[in-house]
Figure (cartoon, rainbow, N blue to C red):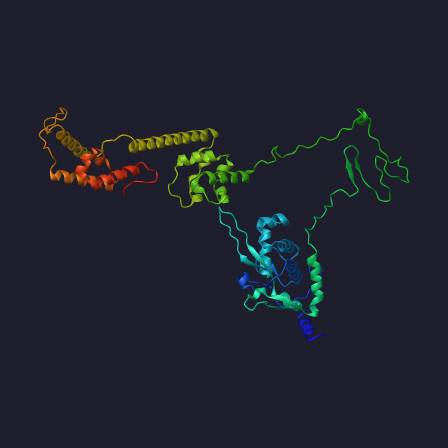
Length: 500
């Protein structure tokens, strides 16, 4: 025996029987990788060159007993057994190794929680390392994690595998196998046979109450059971028998042969619906109502559907629909700012099933809600029509009384100048007839100040109500141009006017 083989044999105890009847060499240490070392840059193992070599390491861990999953958690699988190897077989076929939980559930037939447990076991055993960790955000598409298939360093030590880096600047996990000790070759060959075979899902055990294999039941013959030490005889007389069967043949009664036709038993009706969908139970109705609420109510968007189903469980059990819930929310009143949608919904739905406890009351609430919706729609139409007429229709008088007086005085002075200095309109009385022909300096300054204040608030009534030439003479070119710009902006859908 060489010196290398003797040193390897010294650290390998007597072989133990594994879960798959393969004796593997184990190290006197516990195989466990903490969470901080389950990432590729921090892993102490090396990347497997392909899925076949990685499955050899998986079978070695399964048979060595170095990893004990129950040691670090109080629930989940109790051993690294065939189920974990089945999950690893699916991972060995993926390039790159980026499995989704739903994909592994479909391929293995396990539950979602079981798949997560076995993936965690493979990471803690040093057989998997994160490259990119997946994300699960409520309301968004889940992102699958991407793994690197790793070979633990304990596997290389146990089998005497020598490794080296191809490039000195490359990371340590890229080292490759360069040789193996003689003592580990036999074990490597056994692991290779296990890696070449496929571990399949165990078949369920046959119940002791099931009929025997030799029992057959036809549509018109009843049951025929094969008996030991006799040759099976069928009604069609297929085959021969060395014994006479005349004494054992039983004939049906005369009542069964009266019509000459043997009636078959009535087939059972299927409980499934015609469309292939089953009727929802209480829990299904809760989740259906919760899903519809999160789709129709804006302040419930992004909320967890199971949480909303729990909040609305009472009204769902009472037979409420999403329309009934919206009518009740209109009756209670909705908040403008919502910080937690599920909490607000729980407050608003409190004792709702007792207040509207009959279908007639709920129908009345729905009618009131729809009437309020129709009234709100008409009010919005009226507001839009009024705003359109204001900005696109004829000129309207200013709402401020002081501005109205100033506008009337300005129009009066314009008419006096046109009529030779005297106002001929008889509707305004004699107090305006003695007005001066031209505006005083103070009056002009007041008009200009008023127009500037209106322009700052986005109003152009004072300037646009005058003749363009007169407005240019009183307010100046700059204010008139600014008023024209605002008027054009009012008619554009790309500009919003307002004041702070």
